[in-house]
Amino acid sequence: MCGPLKSWDSKTLLLDYLRQNTPNVIVGCAVEAPRGYYSCSVGDVDLPLHVGVIVNQAKAPSILPLPKVQRAILGYDQSFAVIDCRSASLQQVTQLDGVFFQFLRAEERQQILALHELGVVAISEEGKELWRYTTNDILEDWMIVDNNLILTVMDSSSPVSLMLASGASTPDSSP
Image 1 (tube, rainbow, N blue to C red):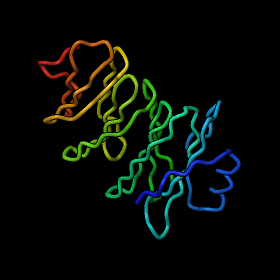
Image 2: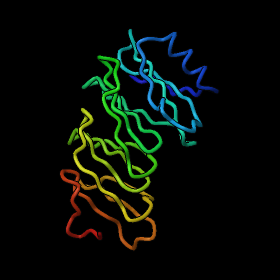
Image 3: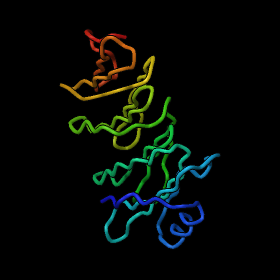
């Protein structure tokens, strides 16, 4: 379960909401120039985990619930965070090389791809980093085709094709 993302007008309003709704976890507390305040609920319908997010980018965060492993992965700013819904705890925060764009699921591999401005990080459903690929320019488009991730990079004449299993370039892929 994942409730809708709610926007708050201030940090005070977000924190007041979280104080009144437990259990809760907050991500992004150390943001130096906050521009957005969000919350949503994940996990058990009877006792949801309330997640607060403070961001410094104008883009709203993205949350990917993983009910099988009772976790949620949150993409925001230049990071993603892994939240354990059972223990109501922030497990880890991983820095990205660019601004977070979106998550893609590779269901058959039980893998999540965190796409960002300058590449991709593949992670397991538990949040373990499996591989990382950094582009030489801004990522413009992406898709999964036949167990490969196809990336379109700005000012590149041909797409980059990466094997989902390892992140290695396929033989017909440009560097």
